[in-house]
Length: 429
RNA sequence: GGGGGAAUACCAAAGCGGCCAACUGGGACGGACUGUAAAUCCGUUGACUUAUGUCUUCACAGGUUCGAAUCCUGUUUCCCCCA
Image (cartoon, rainbow, N blue to C red; front, side, top):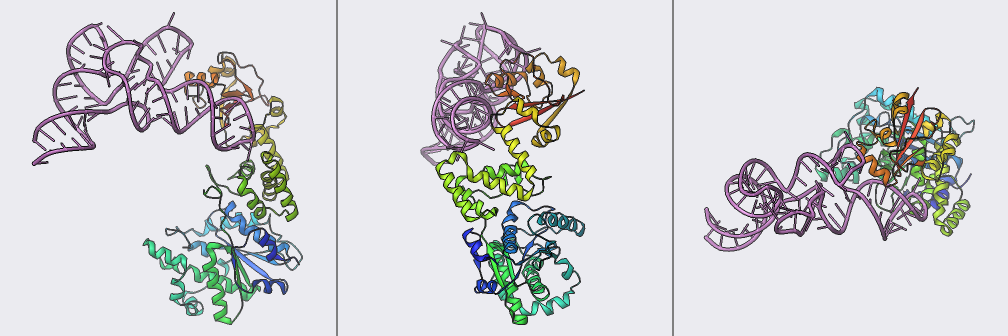
């Protein structure tokens, strides 16, 4: 059994833990749980720190439990959120839970014969039948309001004066009861969570102690930050999701590849399972030749394969070369149609019939046929003269020459406006 | 209430009767360089079928003049000074 705590320590994944946790774990196989809020049908990379913690936990020979907050998701956690949450209905929740479960299976082994196989639990299962009377007697009785009010998360909401409903105020009791329930029925003695969860987790250990004199532990992971102070996990397009439908594997790969040098060392420890020696070697390599960005590449590779697949990774690399490298028409032609469309997923596609394509007398005509690429010929001409327009990776030299390049897959033209804006013209036959 | 000044393109700011679609700086967008970074350098930046072309612009409405962003009158808004 590997040393779980030591592993997390060198990876910089521990924010805080309760006293005695290390000794407790060393005694033998333990079980720990981490909760996920089913607010969407996919996890995003903000959840990944927690997921990785569970993964390390299982790899160290312990049993990870992933708790999906079917019940708590209906309530809303007030922790460090400024406004009251909208409640989700049961149908949406069920759908979200299914999506999240599928993603967790990539990280955790739910099928193992071993005693430490991962287990997915849903607190809706034990909360839904809980009557209010039972709840206030069996749970509420043990925790004082004074104690609950003292929590940072609650205090802050009260100070802001935005109002805190009784429902959200109760949240910590529900989460506390979850911990108690898992402790009692699943032998789960540890709760993992983000640093914002500390207060809620401790309410659980408190409940276990008061109700049964039991011992339970907490471990929180740090909030992931970025060196430039902007929010981690967001791009211009919003959150970075694990679901390939929401964030394509290519975009996902790009997100990690674009991480800054300062952040890369930190992230590679947290988000990959690469061992210490490998990472330190990569860092050395990166220091000697920073422009090669060995760290970012390793980080992006490892995590893309983990979350998506080896093949998705290869396509992402290929796509990156085409979009940013010095690729040529030949490289483009080697892509099959499916891959081509995947690489340019999200790019505007302009459809035109074959006759219009043949009749376009010049590059100018072709690019302004539809107003999407350029609004006017004047605009198009200016940018072509500035050297900013390519078709199928070939720069257009003269705006009034006819476009002579061959169609990709007999139907596509890849138009590049500036360095980063792409359009696909699909010629219908 | 009286006196003075100002309103210009995305922003700032020149222009003060023809050479003005309007200097310059910032921003934005393109290009080169680079690490898909930063810095730097170069180009574009009212619209249009690129034309030593046409059209629409310098708060708004009128006027003077062959000709106005520039002069005059009125209107609106803003700033300053005196009450």
